[in-house]
Amino acid sequence: MTTTVSEPQTPSPTEYADQISLRPYAQAVRKGDFDLTWFNAEPGGGIWGQWGIKAEPSERGITLMDVDRASGLYPGPHAPPGVTPRGAGNEPGLGPRDWDLNDKHELWGENLVTLYEEATSRQWRATEDIDWHLLEELPPDLERATCQFNTFLTMGEYLVNDVLAPWIPAFNTYYHEIKLFLATQLMDEARHTEVFRKRTFANGGGLGMTLDLGNALAAIGATKISSGDGPGGEPGKNPLFSTWDHVSYAIHVVFEGAILSMFRFGEYLGKTDLDKQIFRMVMQDEARHVAYGTMHLKYLLDNSPDADAQLERLNDLATASEMFFLDLFFMHPATVESCSILAGDGLDGIEKGLEIYKMAYRKMREEYLLRTESAGLNRREACMLPPDLPF
Ligand SMILES: [Fe+2]
Ligand SMILES: [Fe+2]
Image (tube, rainbow, N blue to C red; front, top):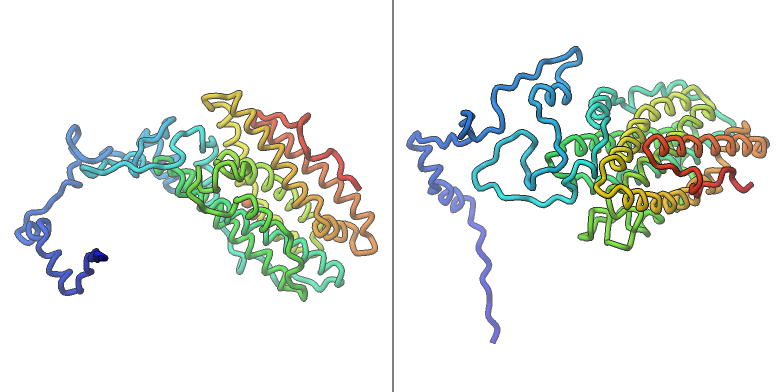
């Protein structure tokens, strides 16, 4: 014999209206008896976190730094287990909520708040703020190399978003700064995807060859959400991306550090004023992402409860990340050759251009080593990025 379990029936709109009108709160309000629990801000017994705060506007307006200063609500080392924004009171009976990241050392960077304010005030528009009319027709080899380089970049930009976006709900709301900053980074990367895509279609070219970057990231679980030990994926399967310290190091420090160097190189390589302008614009944004990653690395190393173990973990991760991105990026024929054609001013100059590409690689590697050193991670001896490319 089978038993049928009856599902609760969804009421019709009329039945639902009748049901809610019987609720105690609805009945009380109809008699003029308001709840006003939220209204009680009296000291000692009130429901508000704080009352009487006045953040003074500075010349720029009211920044998050002004609010912290006025309220004294600077982030502490551990967040309470709940959904409460820093400084708010709690509804009576408000339950806890688990977050993946609840400790300041796991996510903080001393520049996080100022970077967020800078990001919001320096947003720009790929549609209107780029002087598209400055485009000039290029010889086919240079247009093709420009479009291939931009194809690689447009892919890299949206893949960063695929990796980072699932992490926003991992951070305890108490540390709103990291959630807000990452939201600005997602918008920056969306704009970068957009501007590089537009460039490929704006001058008689188009999108070139897709690199394996997307599949490679998916293969290690970086772009997949699962119920593992973090939004990055299943524990043990994807050491590069399973925890935030790994994600931030691999993306903000290694990959975006390299991309920032490539943008600088791109400005040099740009064959029209418009191409140079695009690289100048994206560089401002990218510098913020790398600045967070570097300062987060420093904060993590300075404040980790087990500094030696953390350093060892990061060194292992750095080794894996350096090899991963060397293959996907610096040694990829489409990147090497498109950049070399641009640097050599045409297909005929590819060999001369390769020498310039190799110099740019050496500069990128040195910038990476200086950046990690400044954060307290010395990779000079252990770095898997060879001092010179093998060609
Ligand atoms: Fe970007
Ligand atoms: Fe970025």
